[in-house]
Structure formats: structure tokens, C-alpha cells
Length: 91
Image (cartoon, rainbow, N blue to C red; front, side, top):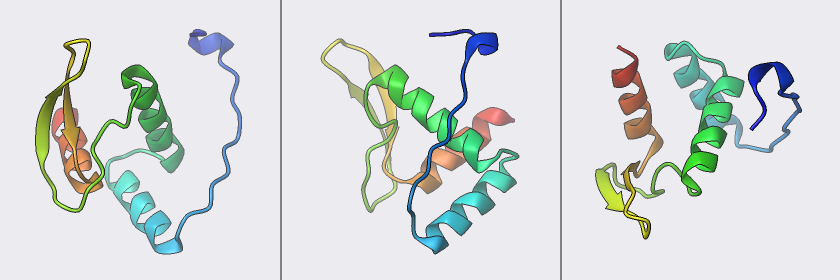
């Protein structure tokens, strides 16, 4: 991976429900980060893990999973729990 001085920036355009976008932007602001920064963190985490950094689902729960390479990953089933976790480790 290129170091910070060599990283080239690009634009990502997505279509998303307006309410989801607004709520997401509000949470990002509360966490002191931009939407772009949050998406970048999400993308980098997904690249590192080779999978979603949480398990999509309707019930909020945290669980520890062991993958086929015996690597442990804490996963979250919804954005609210994930954001709460990030908020907690920032303190």
C-alpha cells in the first residue's frame, strides 16, 4: 500500500436514501469525523479483514468470530452498536 505522500485521491459517488444519508452525517458529526472519513475507515477496515467489519442484521449484538485462519474478529450486527464501539475506543 502506498504511503500517505503517494496516495492518490479519487471520488466515489453513491446513491443512498436521503434520510439514511442525513442520519449518517449527523452521527459522523457527533463523532467528530466527516462522512468521507467514515467511509474511508469502513473501506480500509473491510480491506484489512476481507469482509464486512460487522454482520448486517436487525438485532444489535456483538459477537466474536473465528475465521478459517484462526483470526478473531469482533463483529457488530448494526451501525448503532458499531458507532458506540468506535465512540468508546476514542475516549
